[in-house]
Amino acid sequence: MNEKTTAVHVTHETVNKVGGIGAVLHGFFTCQAYLDKVERSILIGPLFTTEGSVNGRLGENSEVLYSSIDGFVKTGYAPAFQKIENYYGTGIIYGTRTFVDEQTGVKSSPEVVLIDVRHIEKKAINGFKRRLFEDFGIRSDLYEHLWEFEQYVRLAPVAIEVLKAIGAADDSTLIVSHEFMGMPTALAGILDIEHNFKTLFYAHEVATMRHLVEKHPGHDTMFYNTIRQAHNEGLYVDEVFGDQDSYFKHSLVKASRYCDRILAVGDYVVDELRFLAPEFETANIDIVYNGIPAYQISAAEKLASKARLQKYCENLLGHRPDFVFSHVTRLVRSKGMWRDLRVLEHMEKEFRAQNKTAVLFVLSTEVAQRRSQDIYNMEATYKWPVAHREGWPDLSGGEAEYYTAIQEFNARSRNIKIVFINQFGFDARRCGSRMPEKMEFMDIRKGTDVEFGQSIYEPFGIAQVEPLTFGGICVFSSVCGCLGFVNDVTGGRDVKNVIVADYTNLEHQIDPEIEGLLQIDRTVRDNIEACQSEKVAMQICSRLPKNETDLESMIETGYGLAKNMSWNVVVRNYLLDSLEKIAQEAGIS
Image (cartoon, rainbow, N blue to C red; front, side, top):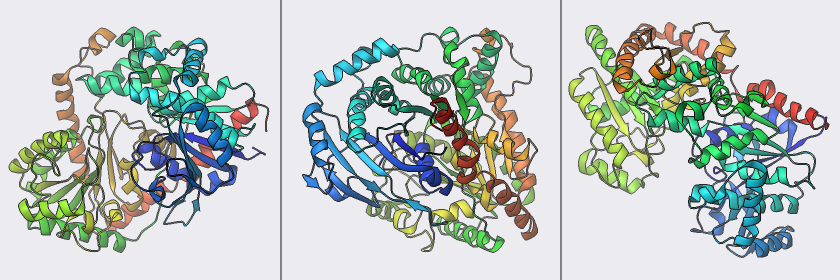
């Protein structure tokens, strides 16, 4: 690309990093290879709350330059913004947000636009909804009662007008739809024939397929065997699983075929997109894996972080474990967290024979960050996080269900214990007085011996492989997209830092026809999980470092992999190639 690009990222993670999209954006905005090629980055999303002061509208490390919500003006764009607000009945917040990589020092400050779409003029939006149906087959009348759909449709025409107002609507402008949320804006860009917007759908998942995997009792065991057979028979999702159009995300994601290009974060995501409809067989889809941290540390540094984790366990449980395991994740069904317990049940028997001990720290919650005051009160009252109680500020419904399984495991296990930390953050201020004062979040990444992540649906899985660069053993399922990247780097060779659990391996036990595969239920999956989890447990036990020499070898191997999976590698080897194709197809380069 000779001409630098303006990249407009449409997402719900404009202000706060919630999940994978936020991690990708942070990776891009602190990656020198991205900054060298993308001259201007703009984040656009809906305004979720009007609470708080003007200074906090765009999150940490931000500067607000315009806010009609607060009557604040510090930009020459104000007259143009006010015209848009008057026409659509919206509010606009505009400014910048700074992203920094603390390790490398690389930083940038993309522009941020938040649009208050709650009271938008219906006339202004109904014409757009009509065009969505006429040009793309999207029936807004089926979904407009769902705010998750409606807010992003309302966002779209306003976002396009804002881009024009700030001079970001020329031939070099690329609208990036991160998941279904940005699709209406991408489609609005396609409909605007006066401006030559390029459009890109960034598939961090395929929402239709996640929905099918999560709700079926056979989960990934059923789904990925079925999709493989369906591909052999030339069948698509509606033919195998029934009409999916009642699911609004399906309708929006299916429209991604109208974009100039589609990026998929993993190999299975490509397969899932091709499974959506026949039109996707010829769609322009490129794999752009997610990047992972790549920092080299010494064995002494790793052991120092591990010592803090061991001390924390000692403060909580009264003993210092030989090994520290971790699982840092969101508490949702797709993460398959029950599989960790199945592996640990087998490891417990082996550890008893070896007279070894371990603790698994699970950092996961399904609600907002608890107040430090509440954490300290729970700690003083009933020894949180070793013990928990149902109800706020402690266990939510899903957390209570998960904790019940932990209680059962801990009651039966002697050498391995699980500590469930249902809190965002990992330091003494957020997690209580029994956590060592010098503890920080990176300690659980650096100091862990094993990171679990055996998801049933995981388009990539950054968290699963974050400890890789620090010599940790990363355990994830065969359907995790990060496996494709690992194989790309290793040429498919087995590496001691990576253990793959294949819960889709039927071992010829099931009728290979689609009708038979669809009958895979929990009983079948349980049997397969029992077999596979034992294999995983034995692999972990055999690979855990026995001395400092082993540890140094694990760090060397892990860093060797990670440095070839960094964000700079992702941008140089995957992303820029896709952007170049878009430019060539548009005749810009």
